[in-house]
Amino acid sequence: MFFHRDQLSFGIVLPAQTRTLADVQFDVQLGIAGHADRLGFDALWVRDVPLNSESYPDPIGHADPWVFLGALATATSNIRLATGAIVLPLRHPLHIAKASLSVAALSKGRFVLGLGSGDRPSEYEMFGRDVESRKALFQTHWERLAAALRPDQAVINEDGQVRGDFAIRPSLQGTSIPMVAVGSSAQSLEWIARNAAGWMTYYRSLSVQKDRLTLWRNAQTKVTTEFRGFGQSMVLELLDKPDATYEEINLGGRTGRRGLIDTLSAMREAGIQHVAFNLISEGRPATEVMDEIAADIMPALR
Image 1: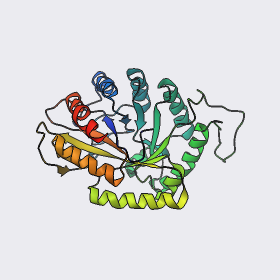
Image 2 (image 1 turned 90 degrees about the vertical axis):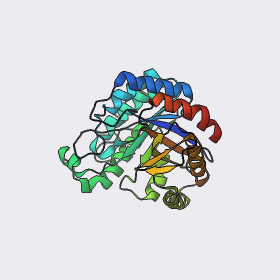
Image 3 (image 1 turned 135 degrees about the vertical axis):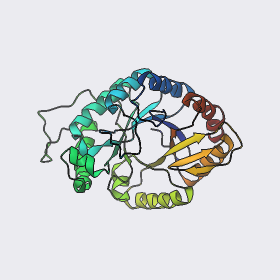
């Protein structure tokens, strides 16, 4: 995993391309993924966006996450592959289990399964689901999925009974596939701390995020003695001006490298253990920005 106590690890959100009305540029994104792997980034994050709409803030036509992850598994060697996040109530848990085990096998155990509830009523309607049922659906689907991904790979039917006459293959690679909650998933923090290996949330100003961290620690204290990681996504516009001060933008920041080092250092001190960069640096190729992060920022924080 990429969650470690008192440490900060770094991920890249894919696709790393201009936020315009366009489909994923597969060759470009696989090149970026390989570059991130060689530079020593810790994770690549892939989103699950079943449908596009003019009302959505992100116009990119995202690829099917499982197809994309299969390509990423063969294009990389060391970096973790994570979903941020599979919309659990809109997909059957046994299908997710099959896909997860396949990606884990293809990537030789590098897969991290991030799961969310989704929050778009119109999308639920298109899939014949009631958005008001997402809390209960998330919990029951999580239970069946977790059972299929544990060492005995139990197959549970709709009634909650283990069906020994069925099996899911391929076999589990290693001891487990980490399951991470992304966003609130319509659950309490106590539920997330009890069931998930970690919690990935959205960017907030650090003063606000510190309050979330306090709530997260309190929730863990109530339900578990095991370590549970905390991470966040972050829109980043890294300027080609090292001394540019940090300025907050929607869901992230615009800054030079020194401002980013100071900001990330404060995040680490607050207890954030992973940051997934959503690169939007205008006029700078994603690979150039990643080079600067790897050469000047990651060493300063490790």
